[in-house]
Each structure stands twice: as structure tokens, then as C-alpha cells.
Length: 190
Image 1 (cartoon, rainbow, N blue to C red):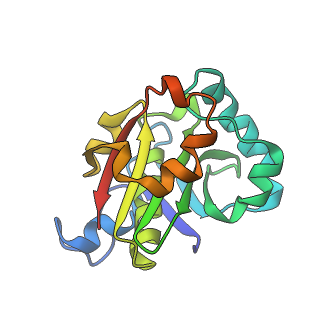
Image 2: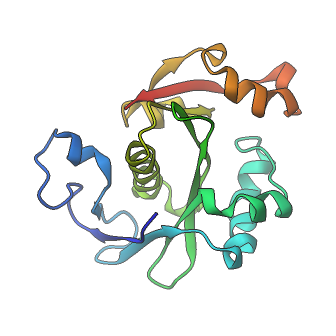
């Protein structure tokens, strides 16, 4: 993953025709949201970011919107994460791309600071993670979520969890909520 500067303004990458495959690949600009005229940067997460990732995810773990991730787990999988930095260098959003096979990856651990939700940070992170999956030749990207409307706006459609046995085997079997899961599966075919 490379660092992607995100500037306030339109949502089209330079040189991409509206509606083209390239226009959906990686956002080059972020709508102003709560920082008129300010810029954000997307970049791969580093080990030094782990405490900030824990703090960013904590409120969503508390509400059950995200599964808990230990410090060990975050350190071990830090290369799967992308972060959004605000103009002051603070991490304001994160998400990971978990690759299960050549055909399947998952957008996971998506979190945006509560006071900045609705400003396009989550959208930018998700589109960048999808672009990463596309660049790796992955056929489908899934997400398990309590907020499917967010993903529907980005082209994901409803799916059955059983359609993803690699995900179920790798994660759901160990999940403390496996018998009372309320997450909805959504998928984007690339």
C-alpha cells in the first residue's frame, strides 16, 4: 500500500472518467466533511500506530460494532491495516484488508473517529482497501457489518455467510458471538 494524499474537493481521481472502473478504484479527493480546506492522508499502518488503533477501535468494540483485537493481534497483523491521518497527524480512521485466498478478502476493523463520521473518511478507506484487493487480483471483497447501508452505497450487495467458508472457518468459528451473530454479510465482486 502506498500513501495516498486526500484533499478536500471532488471525489474523482485525476484522469478518471465518472462511472469508469478507475473512478471507483482509489479516491484521490475527499469531500470537505468537518475540515473545510484541510487534507488527509491514507497510509499503511506501522507498529507505532498500534496504541492509536486500539484507542480508535475501543468505543466500537464496547458497542459490539467491532470484534476485540488484542495488542498482540494488531501488532501481528499491522501490515493489513491502512490508517487515515488528519492534518495534525492524528489517526482519525483505520481499516484492514484480510486476505483469505486468491479469490477472497475482507474489509475488517473499519473505524472512524466518532466526531468525523459522515465526512468521507470511512468511504476513502474502504475504497482504498478495495483498490488494494483489485490490485492483488482478488475476485471478491466481503464485509461482516451491522451497518450494511454504508457498504451498499459503495456497491456491496447482501450475501450469505455460508458463501464464505474460508472466512467462517478462519474467524467465525472462534468468535465469541458465533451463536448469536447479528452481523450482515455484504460482498463486492471485482
